[in-house]
Length: 351
Ligand SMILES: [Zn+2]
Image (cartoon, rainbow, N blue to C red):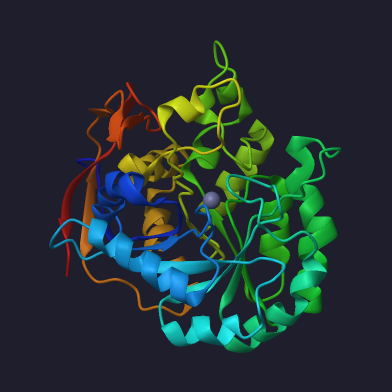
């Protein structure tokens, strides 16, 4: 950061993004296209995006929602099910725009009921995936309702992820949206080929934010916010500059009515201010000089993609987040709605 409170980055990528479909898609894509050069789009539509053909069709719908002239490239992930044929790995690789397969343990989060019920059902596919060099993107939580919700990530590491990483010793794995000290320790100490995404909310908030003055449905996501000790461990790891950690917002839009409900949906919408929120988090941890590598280098390097051209300039100027955004027939509540964010985007240079 220079003396005037500004930071300039190579154009960044969001390696974990939900954009839904239809009217919702049209409402949210412009926010990401204004900030990021590329995004890895998650496949948990209803029905899920399971095949290369479905992903290519979905990608066209996303491109149609990108504002004219915005150079934004959607990258795709396929939803892994117990029935995914092993040959899908080669088809995905040949497409040139699919980076991997997403493992959702069945029932772990929004629209994950078609997910994998037993990891052994997909060993054949994982074998082929390892050969292609594509990645496995993992929602890392066990789904056993007897396991405490705050312990599900740590339990997943011990019972699923660590054995999987050992069994498929060359499989490239992204442990998505890590939230705990246990996950940090696993990723930083793991073999080659293992990385993780980190969301803005897990750097900025701990679980107290779920109950600040009353129940806060717009702070509810999965994996759920964790303890302050966990948040500090995430910040320390990011501040340390490990190339295994990179930007993935997990921005996950739901209509206000689905969030503010007796059984509210999991997901925090952050695309309207994603880069600005990361800038706040990095400033708070005294690591603004690490933001560019986290946002624009580590993820591209992990996936073997060229780093983007162009620049984004952020300035330390507060702005008021609107109380809501239009979202099809409903409305969408962004993180920090009705409050302030300390950073804003001053300029984007596309090449
Ligand atoms: Zn997600």
